Length: 382
Image 1 (cartoon, helix red, strand yellow):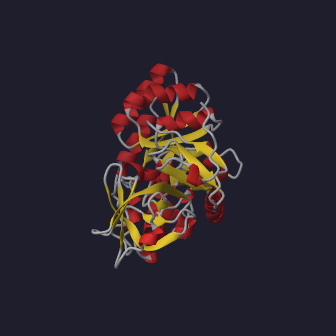
Image 2 (cartoon, one colour):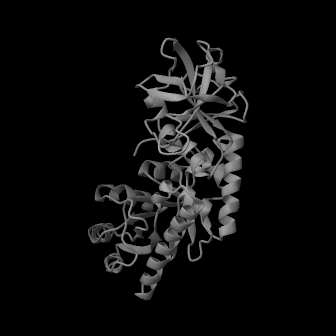
Image 3 (tube, rainbow, N blue to C red):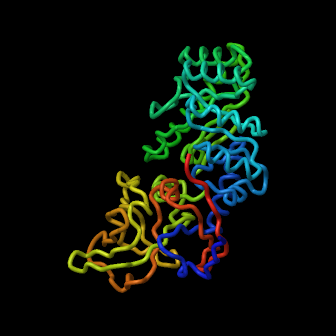
C-alpha cells in the first residue's frame, strides 16, 4: 500500500523523522571538499542514513564505495546498485554464508578481522566454498575498542594466515579512532587524528615490508577527518554522521546546530504546570536513550527542542524520557507556556543521529520549510 504524501509536516502522524534535504546537501558538499583537500577517497559510512536516496546526495551522483555496519545494509545497497562495500564490523563465522552469497552475486564485499582464529575461519570457509574472501586487518590506534596494535607481530601472523591458501586475500588495513569523541581541544583532536593516521600507515608499511600487498589503508571518524592536518599514506576516509550532524558533533565542533539535518517531529500532549513540564509523544523509543552531550559544556538532555519550523527554542531541552513520553523542561527559570500549546508540534534535534534514526523506517523530506517534498525509505535490522 502506497503511503499518501503529506502536504506539510503538520499532516504527519507523530513521532516521525524529518530530514532537511538542503542541510544534507550542504553537509555532503563540505565533506567531499574536505576529503579532496586531504587527497583520499571518500567511503561514506551508511550506518547513519541507511538510505540509497541519502547516499546519492553524499556521493554527488557518482558510484560511491560505502561502509556498512550490518549485512542487511550490504544487501539493501547492493540491490540498489552499489558494488564496492566494506562491512566494518569484525566478522562472525555465522555470517560467512551471507558474505559468500553477496560475493557470488557480484558484490565486491570486504570484511574485517583482528585475530588469527578469525583469519583461519575465513580462509577455511573460503576454500570450502571456492571463494577468495577479501579481508582487512583492523588496527587499534587508541585502545578504545577492537583491533591489533600496529607494532604487534600478531599483525604479521594474521596476514600470513589470510594468505596461506586460496580462500582469503589480504586487502589492507583499517582503523577507527573512537577516542576522538573524548577530545575537547584542537590540540587533542589533531593528536588523535594523527595517531589514527600514523597507526594505520605503520601497520600497512610493516605488512608491505613482510612481503604482503596492502592496497587499502582506511581510516575514519567524522571528528578525525574534520581535524586531521594530513592523511599522507592513507587511501580512504570512512565517515558517516557528518551527513546529518547531531548535537554531539556540534559540541565537538564538526558542525553547527544549524547544520543538523534530521529532527524528530513530536506533538505536545500535556502540561504539568505545577512541575514545570511539557509532555510530548516522543519518548526514548523515538529519541533514543543516548546522553552523548552529558559530558560537554552544553548538556542537551535527550535533545534540543525546536518549533515546527526548526528554529531552536532557547532555554529548554528534553530533560527526561519514558518509553512513549518525552518531558520538556526549562534549563533555568520558568517555561514560556505559550510556546507549547496542546496539540502543537515541536521538533527535537538528536544527541546521536545514528541512534535516533534507527527507530524509523522512513524520512519525511523537506527543503527546509514545512512542506514535505518526498518520503525516503531506510533499511533496518541486521
